[in-house]
View 1 (cartoon, rainbow, N blue to C red):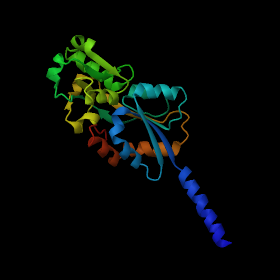
View 2 (tube, rainbow, N blue to C red):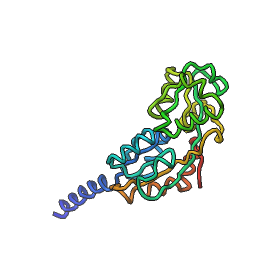
View 3 (cartoon, one colour):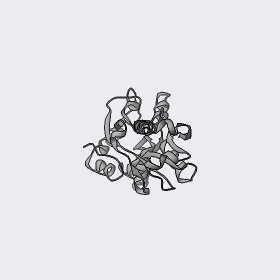
View 4 (cartoon, helix red, strand yellow):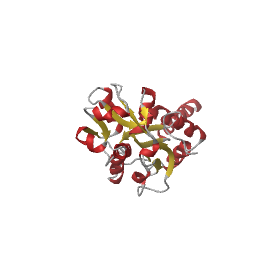
Length: 228
């Protein structure tokens, strides 16, 4: 009888362990190379991450998507969705080309991909850089808009465009060219717990890890600027 009770207790414990920690994260596409490390930040927890443009994910949250944490690529997309806004990193844009094009070569590119500026902070930053360097008007007809920066990067990797302007976090291990920060507005990557999050404790622990020494080191080593 004692062994039967012990076995039942172990089964119940296992069920509780499986269902005891869950976290649903909506994250901007520039963080996709960090997916494995972000999941490892919560040992024993089932962390599921959906990547996309910050604007698209914000729309989903406003429509009732039950994410516990939103990691936006820029502060303005996180505003009004929940409580405290936590800036966890700053971003930079970069040029990437499978054809070896550099910034000074863009004027002769047939097609250049950027993310939709209305939905993606890095797309907006790319347009700002092109405008501030006097290239937008000449290139506008040759710009290919993607849903997010990861898609823009794929367009360039597959040769469908000559180059793409994406995040440095996507391009820096692949021979990309970082562009000066002053060419675009500051990209304050911001975390927020959306209203109605179901796993509040886990969400707070996760955001706490993002701004911890370990989390900040991860960002600094992966093409983002640490903020603490």
